[in-house]
Length: 332
Ligand code: P6P
Figure 1 (cartoon, rainbow, N blue to C red):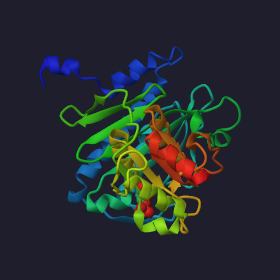
Figure 2: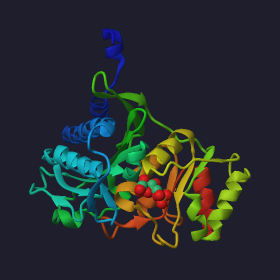
Figure 3: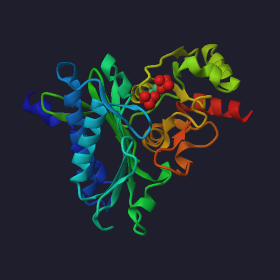
């Protein structure tokens, strides 16, 4: 890469520092914190890239708190996130999809300012068939009062940052700190995430709907009507269907192309399948920052007060046109 080209790139670290400039009281601990996430993302990416060549594929032999078969890469990704973030003394606690309880660090309120909630490897059941998977993260400030455990269950509206790393044909990092949504592509030649999309905006209405149609009959009939209306062009354009079965990949396509992803309540998952704190909340923050919307069908996702760190929720997320149309159909 020529000197001129190199001078033109913006790495995620540079971008985070520029973002910090917008926050007068920012002390750089925030950018140091986010660099822990990008480092873990690069470690996980390297492991996934070589997964087919080493003994890292397949089941680990345990089940996690969700009752799901832990994949070896799930365990590796969780350890990478806990290692990289645990070393940041600005971290007060970590909440992971893979851990029953929060990991709490004995740091005072002045030092340990942040709580990070994450799904280390979402969609991991797709790894063995080489389908995109992702790491999703959400960052909260630790309130000054009370012990850390009592301050983990905050509504999504309190997030100070959120984002994901999508491991696919290229490795993408998308994040927001509340000042727009920004996307980066990992350049393996320099080992840095480089700015690819600044101030990403979700199209008003999109070409696709994304749902597991095999379970539609287990949901309220209104959802089948909603799909019919999108197919027939009654809600925005005539929609096609796309469903990867990896939330981060389905969401990233929706962010770029528009449309809607939804996982409604079903007989098997009456409270929804996806998790509020480390799947719905971070993606809802990004969706809204990009001009989209996210609901559980009735309420705004970011307004939901969590009662448990592994709480599940129904989710409909994407362009405003489709999300608002679904909400009004559900209201009746
Ligand atoms: P289903 C992956 O296991 C996951 O948690 C999300 O990444 C994905 O959107 C969803 O489950 C897929 O669920 O029931 O369609 O296989």
